[in-house]
Length: 523
Image (cartoon, rainbow, N blue to C red; front, side, top):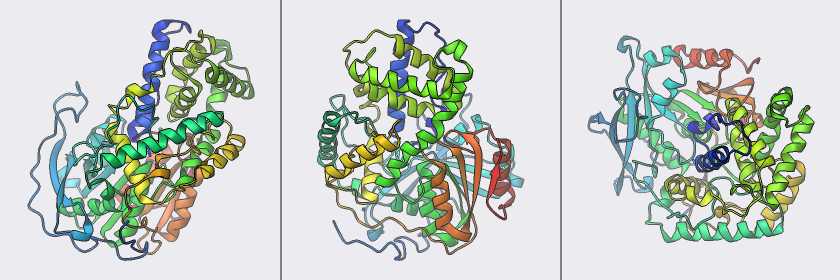
């Protein structure tokens, strides 16, 4: 669904003049970046049972020792000092039903333990998406302040999962002629906007089909989970440890379910609610925004003398609707109501973006309407790979409704139930027109196995609402514990700042101390 890098939200804007051209240009750039990031967000052949033994579940074949070398250019952030990461390639089957057939290369990274004497193994990481590059994830988490003890206890293992970046990338061929918004459909403010998205969704599905070289159908959560087990074996580990964010929670849930005896300590952070994203899961984004928006509204109301967006949370909410309605009719500096709503959704990922968000509201409220073209298409080329992987995984994992009327009714229902954003994630997806054959059902959550799954969840998360954490915790039964955090944002461990939550997760990963029962960390 979304990568951990998304959780930084919008960068702080320094301009104070709401009509300053630099300020509005900054907003346009920021919103385009946000739109690109949301594409990163959470198989006709024979169908296998969700409860059948997973393909590739047998002990992977012995591999030659990994050859660690410098990572590809651009993996680590420039200016971060000497390279800290090492990279290696792991070969895995393209199709696990033919494990001796065609192989593909997966690129993984390693940040070695700082204290080999304290090292207990490797911790595999996933930043989310699906489609997010994870090679830099070990460095990113250290920059976010991950617990020092963790850096002693584990080699941190990042990776580009199959289809992504440096791991046999796939492409739907997105280009600037496609008005596509990435993983979240645009807000359908009327029937004409919905009809426009129907045409776009079908065109995108056709483009993915036209560009399919035979690999796209094998880009699924179940296959990525099988890849994790191959990577675990290639690292020489008897059992795998895992920390996954957002869509990475779905991948981790599949991994723990398909390989219960080969997994050790598993943390699922900011949860999709299952092992896959389906229409119901996508629609829950709207609930997440309704849950989280009041935190921003209270923040802005407390600073009404500075921003002038309303002196009560209710007044701030009214201002949101007024700006969105204005932009639906008359864009400002190329930003229309759909883009404004998407930008607001992404800004709720991290409270540190609130100041920039308030400045953007002022710019859009007070700016002069114009008919400048939307800036969204500029993001398409750079986001081609991540958007392609998102669609492949999401559409391959589970069958989506094919009747546009199903989505149209969902838009009408959720526009009323979740007026802030409901008419966006309920809108029609390219999955409705997907033409690539699915190979299997999604993995079912396995509640029989060790108690080794820690579910971490903010109580107010715009994209993965708290109910998702409750859902996956219930599915795992006695195998899991739910860590609820009285806080706001997307991403608990290292990305959030709740000390209690950091301690609970660190204690589990470092010492194996699993809470005896579900626990809530206060604000």
